[in-house]
Length: 162
Image 1 (cartoon, rainbow, N blue to C red):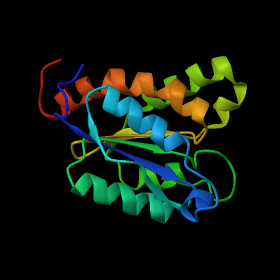
Image 2: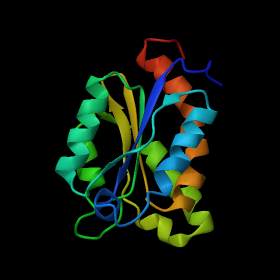
Image 3: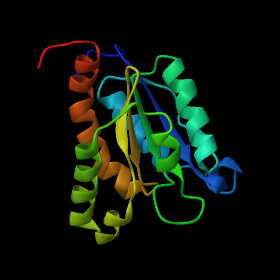
């Protein structure tokens, strides 16, 4: 467990409807609560519209701001505007495919549709970035894995030993 507020984290909810105020963001607050519970300093979720350009811009700003962990929710499916993975791939330097694979595997145990998620995970500079689906169940199932790995990944990014 991380020392309280040692590292910063952020959540980006990717949703056209939430960005327009037509639907409340329910998945972002779950991710924020999980990160705070794991000892990260985390503001309320940032909500952006769907689309690779919006995702890329939000991620680049957070990485430039020194945020150590970024979790996105939404935009990982196959609908035409689901482009979170594409925006994420524009930003990350190195993929961590095992995290995305494990998130899908765990999700599929509860709901086979979790295998449709195209979420990615990787690092950009000294930031861990992980895409989660927009469903509350996908976030609730995925956050324990992210919080269990984040401290070690940050330590490695900072030059720590294995």
